[in-house]
Length: 633
Ligand code: SF4
Ligand code: SF4
Ligand code: SF4
Image 1 (cartoon, rainbow, N blue to C red):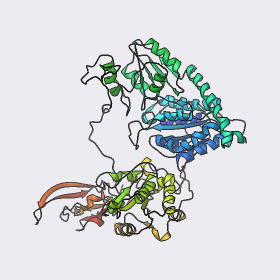
Image 2: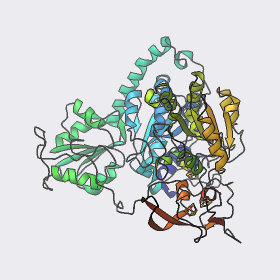
Image 3: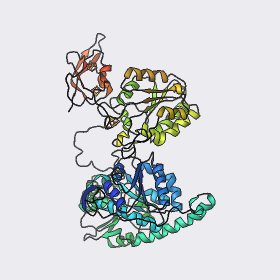
Image 4: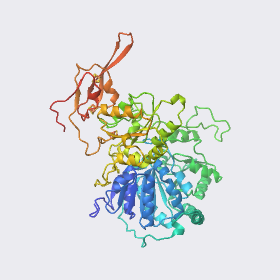
């Protein structure tokens, strides 16, 4: 163990790709790291924050995190910002001009694509940004490469005066492997911030001169890519098929086709077409295996090289061995076709495989995502379910789970902060059919600060009529409870100024009398505020003020239980959606009017119940009572 830094260096460690990136940045002498939490990349910064030699911060969004790193780079230091794939959409405004000015200290953007959508609203391929911004893309295929390529990315950045994209995927981020680490290198550019308006002030006259330099840089990178050992041919004895691949698919191919030649692109942009052409000349058939989009495939075909790709391989999800084998097996004539061939297709006897088969373990009992026991959002959705004739635009966070059972509450969810603009559009675009519809937006504290504030400003500026539920749970709940300006703590848990949401909303144009702060566990008060504000022809904000149950300062209270003989099976408490409440028996009865009614008799798992007091207030017969003499361990 390193005596100065509690994190080991110069050792072999069993770590995830995310930790490897943080350690690789540390080893490269990186000084500044910034991120907004987002699965699957969140842990990169969490690990980095434990390394005292680096400044690290949770930024309010990905664009800000990139801008911080641009500034640090221009100041002469090495900097890395980390984000999930949709984060780079947000940060792209900065990237698309930053690529013109170049770097001071090395600048690395670690972006993680959620291939397979384990925790995202879409599936995107961040390699496109390399083409769009004319910057190199590095792709590790395991945790060791995540470490090595992160270190190398800083050198590449400085050598070619360019930001570098490190493209990760969920598998690389989360899967652990043995990683050999090195000591931290000192990085000293020798110069501080160097004033150079012609390079750094991107007005049209200056930018025009920078664009040709960017293209020259891209050409140099192209030559580098052709010569670099990052793009390595693993030779094989079976020349029936050769593969071009990048990222974790390399490992899957090695497992499924160990004898096949594989050109592994550690630097997947610019594309080393010469090396690909060379491999094509040595094999009977060239296949490009890439997650997600057919980017390499299109570029290889445009270069006149005959290659197969998404005609035979799935376009969504991971290219794990079980996705590769059926398609490649058919190509090799090893699996008989059961589908009709595509007429006129160059491989008329090879049926298309569009969707990968389920991964191993998918036969497990399905467990839909749900909110935690006593989540402060439960009462919100319980109350919303009682409001009629409404449209609810949701946002990205734990409260997106309100779209599921039993609440089925959300009508839209698009992207970070979109609840505001979408609600405003639903209001302004309403037709006579919806003239009395109540427009409601639901957004969390962190998402509001990330990208929602601007939407609220737009609503008030344009005299909109939206009831906004701002769910302040004092954490970025969905990604594990990271701090933000609403929690009053920084990434190290130290006290920071805590934003006052009521004042912030007032500053954004909401009338003070239309702003209410409520305890979401007090259902009568919450419901009254909601019912009154949806009737008002103005913009209102209802701020809930109770923390996520997973934050360290959440205080559980004595739990509740159900008195069996009092429970009438009315099911009201089930509408709260708390996972601690479970059904013990169902019965169907016939009402006096002849209609059937289903009853569900319930109990509470007292060891899980935190005594939040939500469900007792939904129980008419007072069947939910405190557990006496309970001792919480
Ligand atoms: S993590 Fe927190 S905010 Fe998210 S569902 Fe659980 S309690 Fe609710
Ligand atoms: S609300 Fe009360 S009476 Fe109704 S099912 Fe729940 S515990 Fe039983
Ligand atoms: S009081 Fe009810 S809603 Fe709250 S945690 Fe316990 S069972 Fe869940």
